Image 1 (cartoon, rainbow, N blue to C red):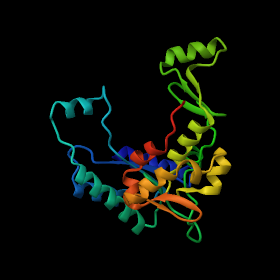
Image 2: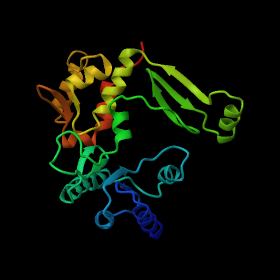
Image 3: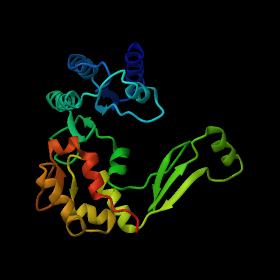
Image 4: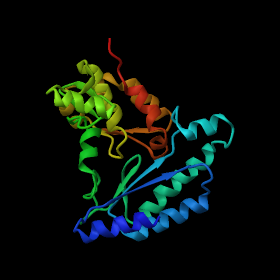
Length: 252
C-alpha cells in the first residue's frame, strides 16, 4: 500500500496532472466492506482517472489452480453488487463512467460522449483505430491486420538484432470481420456506437448488418437503440463481453 501512495506523490511532484489508479474487485476473500473502504481510500487520493476490473481466472495461474482445487468459491452475486457499488460511488465522487471498467473526471460542462480526462489511447482501440505492437507479447492492429509479437523476450530481441520484425503471427481480417470486432469493442463504451461514426470507421452500417444482434440486446434489457446510435444499458454493461460475442463476424 505504501508503495502506491509514494508512487502517486512522486508523479504529482513531477508535474503529472492526469493520473490513473487501477483497482480490482471480486478478489477471493474481498468483502463488500473491504471494497467500499478501498474505493474511499482511492478516491481520497485525488486521481483524475480510475480503471476498475473484476478478477478473472486464467488457466496456468495460481488463482485458477486454487479455484480448481476448491480453496474458494466464486460469488457472482457479490461481484455484481460490487460493480453496482463501484458505479454509484464513482458517480458520487464526480467520476463519469465512459467504458465498462473506466471512469474519469471532466473539466468544464458535463459531456455526453467522453469526459475530458478519459484515456485517449484506449478510446482509440475501442473506436477501431490503428495501434502498433511494441515490445514482447504486444498486439497491434494496422490496416485490418492483427499482429502479435513474440512473447519470449530473448527471442524478441534476437529478431530485432537481425533487423527482422519480431512477429509471432500476422492475420489479415476481412472487412466484415474487422467491422465486427470494431462493433464489439466500441460497445464497451457508455456512448455505444453512433451509427454515422461506425460507418465512418468501418464502411459498414450497423443498422443493416447487425439488426438482429441489436434487437437481441434490446429484448434482454441490455441495449437501447435510438435514432442515432446503439448503446448498452447499465445492466448490459455488466454483460458487455457476452453482447460483444453476438456482434463478432467470423472469417468466411
